[in-house]
Image (cartoon, rainbow, N blue to C red):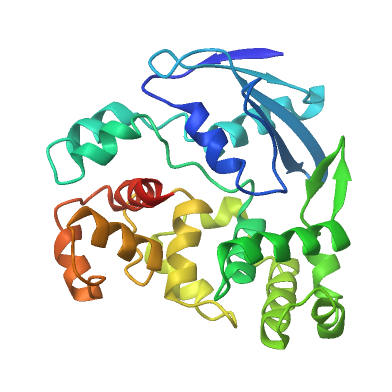
Length: 286
């Protein structure tokens, strides 16, 4: 068991509240912990990450990791929760902008990641073009049916499992035929080494875009969200996202949702931290 101190502000309770939206996440808001499923050298590892500090003085207890995997698991956990990113300068930047009130209300919210890039992309594909409630239902059915568990924590099905699925098997879960094809294609791509975290994290945003856009079912919105929540890139603003459009409509009291061109005008004041602007705008309407 290790205790890790992080530079504040860092509001882990807001992190947990967002994680708790997904029924596949094992979260305890009262005890302030989440169980994180990790694959270390193809071995499933479950780490418990528990807040024992405050927003201004964040401290975390990490437990449950078997000895051979501790170093790699702790590095990955730090990357997932963005513990190496100093949020104070970002907060100071935004309180001088039109997003001041939102950043004050949600102070210390980090840009944290999905638990691994492969499941991040898989989740984005499943969530496309359906409402959020059904998206979570569909994802849960998929993981419960074809994934596995360790210590009561669900793991997404391995790429080689997904690559062998049929469209008919996914249609039984209420996937559309096209979405089923996309998901199976992502499984095949990952099996072929297309979604290696260590490789992707060293590529530029443009290189990743050019790589992923070739996959069926992956468009600009998917790539932008993957860059944010799969890899933690700091300067993405998905103008096609309806949630951000609605948040801007509310923020500026607009009669209709802004056009993508109008969104770009707003966004130019928030660089180089557009991903944080996106995150906090989403939080403002949740």
